Image (cartoon, rainbow, N blue to C red; front, top):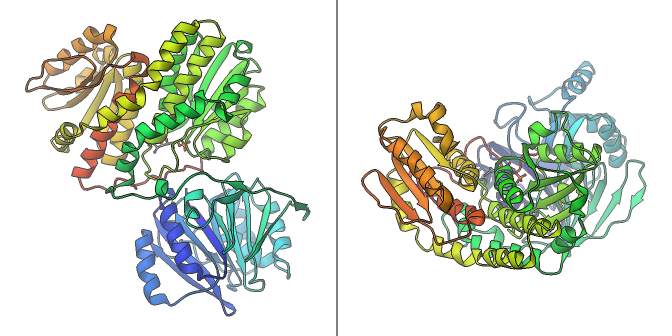
Length: 602
Ligand code: M6R
């Protein structure tokens, strides 16, 4: 939610910041703005709408400078308009601030400053940071920032510039991500790695309440007592190609197509010696009497598939909880509970909250994360990384697929450790996993039919995704994909549960996507299909079994696959179906309305 970037160096900050904002636009796209320092003043341009609007305004603005900050906004406090866009300035225009997060006590601070006669220019919570900094500024920006940070409640990642100290860019964070990038051509702050990838792969991950002071050729870190902190930079392995469309019309399609490679890399990284394998091997699974998987959105749906696989292979009961619910339900977890936390970004506020709650109660936390060095990756007791690389489209695809295979391997290894499967069975299952990239490629080679079917489905008012067992588990992800990018209402339902009420909604023309990759349940799900067809529905049947098509039933046949791992193939069909529905509707697929990729607020 919201992306921030800052630069200090010898080059013009404006194009660097605009390019960086484009790479952060997935974090929010209600408005954007930039401020640069030049000759004793800030040049500021802020526009409602996408970065493209800001870029157009910048053409006539004639601002430039070697120090600057930029922001792309996902609105929380105050409607998306020019005034509420960041950067915000103090009323004397001596301090400029970009903020990602929510200042919970902004009303009190605003009231206090207004009583002192300070005039505000926006309705945002963020403006109080700039005004308060200016109020407390007494010739030393770091001391002013420390005072302000001691007053602020809530979450923040801040980039701060001061007219009186034009040789420094200052940053501080609490409960929202902020990285510092270093290069020979200047230094950077950013919400996320892709923003600065064209310039550097050397980064520092700021911890909460740490201050970074950047000059054009140096970076120093301090704690809230103004003491120097020593830090080592990490080198990011993500590449620029991963963060670019590479000829595809949308990031989402590119990321769908990347899945065989991502699955293969994740399998390799998890089976071979290395950090993932170490994390798995280090866990004494026999110590736990309960497993909880907690996450949000797609990551949580990967967890639901994981639950089926874990329970089948390990014979251990697994609960799956939305992180936003888990943290407030007085969860029953203790030191005998393993809590698996799943997150692409590693920065989702609800998931971080759930993980901290679990740790507080004595549970052991195991994180499955994509973003290296993110908060969840750093704070979990054990971390295994998915190898999805940068995922830019708001709708998760390749990160989800990587989460699935990591969960499968985790379940197999735990089952082996618990003695629930012998070495022969383990080897068989690993062979099945190793075959997934090739099978995923086969699914991606035949997209024409899905494309055609999707084109004929754009006027659907409501779509039901049904399945049983893992086919039911993967239905949640199919339904979410369709909702978030095509704006068509959809629901995931257990096939056998339809008749207990929801079948009342089935009428002429309703689309039902039925998934059937569990051979022993084929007859059961096919009965459900007949029930909906006889009430007027048309059915897209996604199955590993040959099935006769007719004017009501269309088949998408998948390659043979072990049923437990079949969600890795069926989900590709569901992703492509949603993608082509949205593409045929002419929607903004990579940046769907009201959403942001990384939800760093509650
Ligand atoms: O970064 P995370 O995996 O923690 O994000 C969780 C959800 O916000 C995310 O999966 C969201 O549901 C996506 N838009 C789904 O496509």
